[in-house]
Amino acid sequence: MSEKVEDRIKELEERLANTIPNKHTMRSINFIKAQLAKLREELITIVSSKKGGGGGFGVKKSGDAQVAFIGFPSVGKSSLLNLLTEDKTHSKVAAYEFTTLTAIPGMFYIEKANIQLIDLPGIILGAAAGKGRGKEVLGTVRSAELILIIICFKEDGSINFSDLDIIRKELNDAGIRLNKKPPRIQIKTRTKGGIHFTYKGKQVMTTDDVKSLMNDLKIRNAGVYFADPMTTPDDLIDYIMGNRIYTKEFVVINKSDLMNSPISNKEISDKIGHNHWVMISAKNKENIDSLRHNIFNELDLIRIYLKPPKQKTDMENPIIMHHGDTIETLCNKIHKRFVKDYRYALVWGKSAKHPGQKFTNLDHTIEDGDIISIYLKR
Image (tube, rainbow, N blue to C red; front, side, top):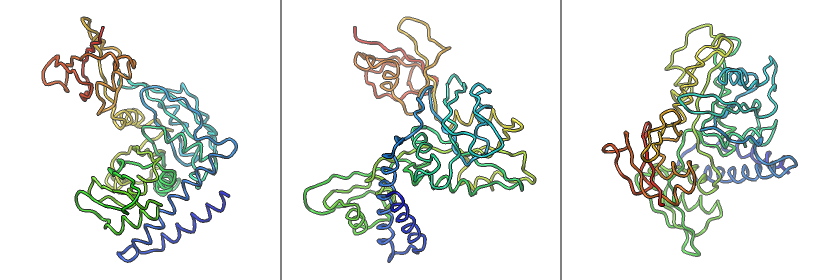
């Protein structure tokens, strides 16, 4: 059954690649994209329902954040994990492919935060279709807050950027959206009246485009609203299909010891598409500390210091949170009763207008370095 679905996906991908985008072909292109989205969801369901299916490797999430390593076999993921965790994890290392056969978790400590790293088996072509333990690899990746894509220099001294394109496609086919925010779309289904489309700002889709695509996805009657300008057909498909994961990528270029001629940072950034990358040599232990700090920064972590009422601030054991978190998030992390019995909080730091500012609401956004006293109902 899965083979038939894979064949159909391949056929539609070829049709899509051979269709030149213009105003006359956009409706056909959107139809193909809708069909592909449904078939990929169907394929994931088929693969997950097979014996031994289920999603990931069952790695229990721990620490303040989880980071997944993903890359082709023998790019140096296991060596890198051992270096980052100061050899406490002992992920098996060997000079042949497919050494890692399951997910291996490790932990490293930086800036008062405990970061869990997951070394995953080398991804192969067809991972999104469940080949080569791809289902388990991608299932684990979906729970990570940051994805480290590992590529490396080749023996001829060039960087293997083609691996990056393949991995990104595999992740995209598995419903993982890198470096994107969820589309701000509202859809209210109705019993009649067809499709009513409203929007904010300039759009790439016309009302007819939206109606056609909604019908292709079996939604005949609904109110559709785009809150962001330039919302794409892919955004609309993602919103309707659901089950999409939006996360960040950071690219690690390993084996810099094989580099035989200089390459500029701009050239690398242009090839990757952004400047969120670092070049390292796991073999020579070069730039490992820089990678540690990059991981911390990419995770957008902040440190919050608690000051129990009428006591000194605990400056040794901060609570690690994320940028954008609120007092409510902090209370939930301490204990759920802190939300239920919350009276007010006193805040010292960047998020307060003055030292010891009082907040009776839970929705105040906290900042790195804030000192907070939480008062509960008696």
